[in-house]
Amino acid sequence: TYKAERYGRDFVQIDKWYPSSKRCFHCGHITDNMPLNIRTWNCPSCGTQGIDRDVNAARNILQSGKAILAG
Image 1: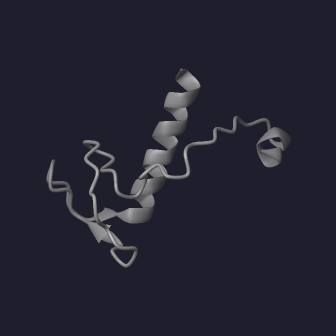
Image 2 (image 1 turned 45 degrees about the vertical axis):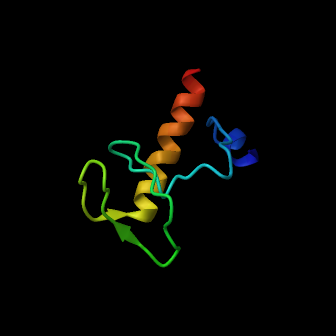
Image 3 (image 1 turned 180 degrees about the vertical axis):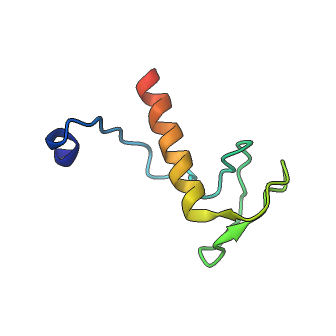
C-alpha cells in the first residue's frame, strides 16, 4: 500500500483465495485440481494450450483489480 501511495498508483486488494493461476485467462474456466509442480497447462474448456501458470495468474490479477476499480 505504501509503495502505491509513494508512486501515485492505485492499490487494489483481491481475495487471497482467488484462483488466479487455475482460472483460464481466455475463457474463465477454473481447473479444480492443479498441484504446484504443474507450471504450464492446457485449458479443457477453450482449448488454449501452453498456459504459463505465473503469466496467467498475473493477467487474472490485473483483470480482477481493474474490475474492482471500475465498480
